[in-house]
Length: 319
Image (cartoon, rainbow, N blue to C red; front, top):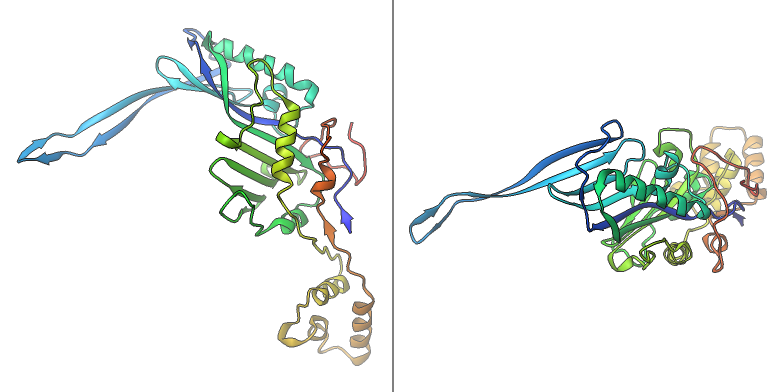
């Protein structure tokens, strides 16, 4: 079977959300770098009548505050008095775009940048515990075949079937999401590469943060565990009419009980019909396979980089 290309694995961190501790909002910040918004959450309570007495409606009000960095899109959320959560895309913090996956060696410098930005918008706030971690890989594979290989697949840890949208598939669980989509198209550019992304929350989130650094090796192992529960089916990818008819025959698809090529050539002369039938019988159908187990070995490393919008020939090295 044809397999996915031999590009090195590029699996690393993407979006991360942390709770914050020990800090307040910085009284001054650079408005050229940060946008700030504030508001109130208002919940109306309906009037109640008890023992003939009418109690008027009341309101529960909670003030909120958010600061968002314009370049990196880092978002800091909290009450009007203190920041409570921060969310950021680690590649976007480092490079200004989440279409690029970080090399593992670049993760510490990207986290240093996170601390710098956090210090600019808050007064002494520190990263506490991660509540969401996304780990992603870029696959240099054809989008249509990759989606067809997993369309309708029932993921073992998620009750619902995948949601299909124009650029890919998404399996949605309460504490786990798995996405396979065309990152280039999603960013409004040319097709490719396909991003395979695992989003972990709650009990599905491993202890990858020790208070000072992210554990890339543990993140890879959990990513591999979740991804290898996907079982892609072999997909035929016909490139001409004869291959198309041969694929239908191999899959046992016969409209009205007759081979599709006979219906197609029903008004052709007998010689052309005979030649088409012979070509279909001689055609060897070779399915394409997205081989995830081969791509993610138990002792895998993350040495390479493939940007969204860049595609390489199968087997090519990526610098």
